[in-house]
Length: 114
Image 1 (cartoon, rainbow, N blue to C red):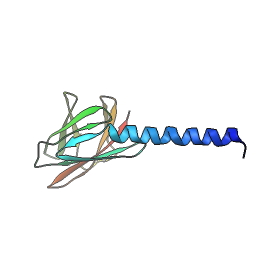
Image 2 (image 1 turned 60 degrees about the vertical axis):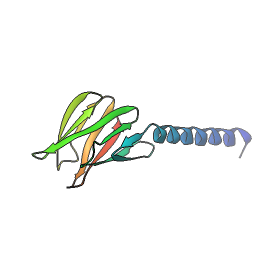
Image 3 (image 1 turned 90 degrees about the horizontal axis):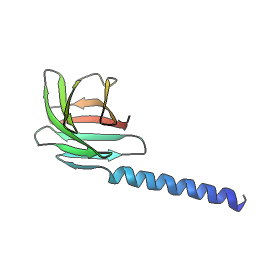
Image 4 (image 1 turned 135 degrees about the vertical axis):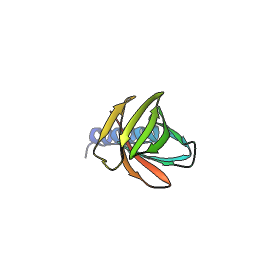
């Protein structure tokens, strides 16, 4: 292995680590749990709380769950998604969002950059 390919690999690893740190640090929450990997964040909202999170720089708030629909406020715009169809996504605020699970205690979203 020559020095040039080792340096290239080291640079690629450093960039991947920086991206991962940036994605994780780009998430914060209140009444929610946010976990991110390189391409996807999972947001678990507590249904009993005033739950909100900042995901990849975008504010997401759980407004409510009613009649098999989840209402979210995404950077000031309300979005309604059906419960039970995790393949249905909506794109807004630079994010692609789908509902993964709804229980009596929580709402779980899958969030990626659009």
